Length: 301
Image (cartoon, rainbow, N blue to C red; front, side, top):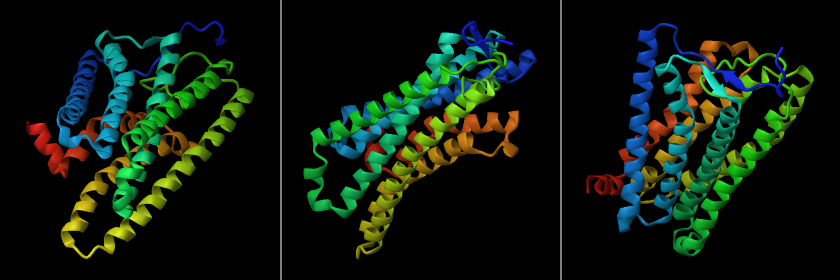
């Protein structure tokens, strides 16, 4: 029975036992990782270099790409290295860092998606006041608040998680240090304290979700009232990519952390973890560039 004070490392979940499948996992994750790096880096470069894209919407998109790069770089490289070198180990400090960075980037991304919903609301429902409300200072403050909220959430969550005594060994049934899997190693009475913390943070998540829903209810109401079909098409082109990213982010993340125990199994947990931690950073650039002519032209340049 391991004690958290004596733990020096954790053992992560291995994707495969045979060398061929380990190399296949390495190759698949390498391809996804390189695609995410390329896509997000191209968006960051295009927005930074094209003066026509120096608007609030693209400023927030640049921040989202930075957060996506951080998210996928926190989990995937370590998993690839473990498969390449045929090991499962991650140091205690490395696990703490992974938990902190995962919550930092995910918390910041969720806050930023809420800000982006507000930006779309102002652009469509308050177009005459858009430049006044979404000035450069206001945008910088909103983005800074999103990053700061992610940092605060990660700090509190990481401190609370690793202050709990771990008395069920050191095997984490996931390819990175995921909090629900770490909590399975804790003592039963300590688990309740972290569960209470989850409930408290869930209320904050719910408030942000309500803000996003209310913003889009008013957005779609305003869009449907537009007399011009071209205006409706342009408004939907601006909103649908953001709505798709929000839906993908929330559906996979909420299912991973709030799914009932009856649905929990190593295979299901692994698939869900890949869906919410690996897939969104890789497909977000594609979602945002698919229907965006300005971004396509900037990327071609």
